[in-house]
Image 1 (cartoon, rainbow, N blue to C red):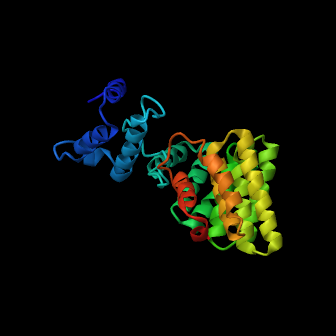
Image 2 (cartoon, rainbow, N blue to C red):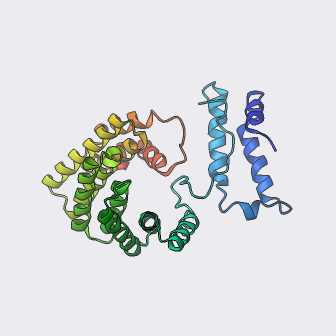
Image 3 (cartoon, one colour):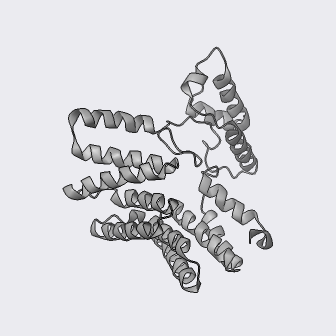
Length: 286
């Protein structure tokens, strides 16, 4: 088995990233090995496509780093390329522990995490129920850490159930807590969600104008914070809105400027969505 340093040396000596990926995929698929038991999911096509992309960059002397193109495995509690994680196993362990020890703080945290997972998996009603219960417990105790993010997921779950008024009320509370608790790191996403939900209620000139202002504020706030991923997400939403308003050149310019600052992670869902918009000609994008 190669070490990271050995893989980097091999790449520098002319070994292709694609060959490293194929070697790893062969070991995973080996019936005499433990690959099928160890790996919950294998992103073979994405790994090959990314390897080919890095090989092309390296051939032109533009590889992001000496380690670019080395295949890795990722623990199942991390998000990867837009897939919902298998983190429920970890959340389940946390729930078992806090139930045994009756630790209220961690119980509220685990309930919120489980609620987030359910919303991401499309179980909106159950996820929102858990999030509300966890957030109410945290409110009674005065715990605010990470609440804006939990509120944001709750709002997204409510909007998905066709309850935009409730979702907007939750977002307003999240923005208040963000200011009160000095947790402005999630404000760009809250502003983006607010705009999306506003457009779910109505799409008249007033709503379109308000949504555009919120999305521009989301992009600008993320830029000020150096939150590139949240800036991209907001720029995609802004571009989508401007496409509908037949102002695609304006939206495309902003989105392209944000996308150009990425040097890795191009297989992630948000980056793929941005690239899809940028690849479409104006007439088709509408």
